[in-house]
Image (cartoon, rainbow, N blue to C red; front, side, top):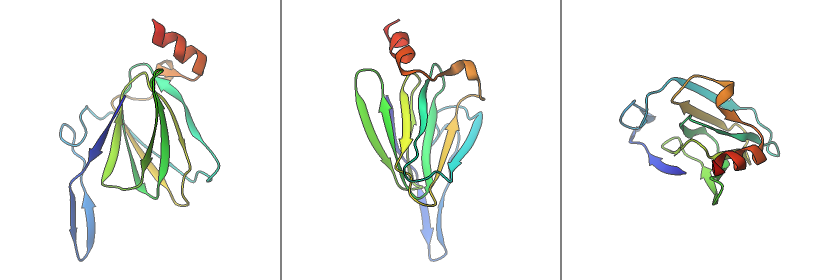
Length: 131
């Protein structure tokens, strides 16, 4: 369903740096990167699964929670560090919520945006899992 990922942090008196490289920290070819930010504390995002897409999620600022559901198990993951993230497999329902003020959630995907890859109805998601 998902995997926790830790990134090498390089820190000195000037601050910290985290580098993400395809094939090393990112276990797939990167095709798209986007950021979710400016979300109110009570607002939720996501409410979908992807038929094929794989993603890496990292809170580069602030923190949020991610509900992941593979149809058999539901897990809540807290993202709260730019040096830690999660990879999320295809056919996993996701909802992001509890965004802190100033939260920036970066998402790296293994494909470009394709609306046909999205499942935006939870009942349809459950039906497709049964196939």
